[in-house]
Structures are given as C-alpha cells and as structure tokens.
Length: 85
Image (cartoon, rainbow, N blue to C red; front, side):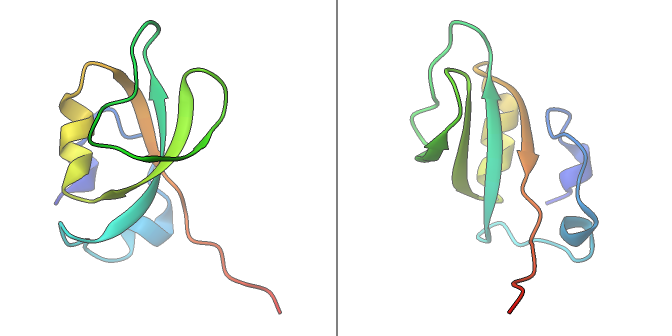
C-alpha cells in the first residue's frame, strides 16, 4: 500500500517510510474523530485521549478503510522507538 496516497494520514515518520508495508502488517495508529461521530466498528481502541482521539492497532490494509470513513478526521502512524537498556 502506498501510504503517501492517504490524505487523512498526517506526516509519515522516516521509520515508516524506510520500507514498504504489507497489507497484513499491524501498525499503531492515532486516530482523531470528527465532532459528533463514534469510533468505527472495525477498529479496537488501545487507549483513549479525550472524546475524539484514541490509539489503536490496525492492519495496513485497514488504513484505506479509515481514510474512507466519514467519522475519521485524521490519523497518524506512531513511529517505532528503540528500547534503551
């Protein structure tokens, strides 16, 4: 999937752009909902940050569904952070 083609997707971290993503790969996504809308039924939230923002794990293929969903105002893929020992 060409993640750059998703208009609701905010800036892509370099770690996400570094390699192609398969449709079945799971990524952590931050999703902002439009006012008055509810969470899309095909997404399971991990954490809620207020009434309109939440994080969720989603397959890369589901990003296109989020893009098409009128409830979604914007989304962002969380960047990978290295573990410091």
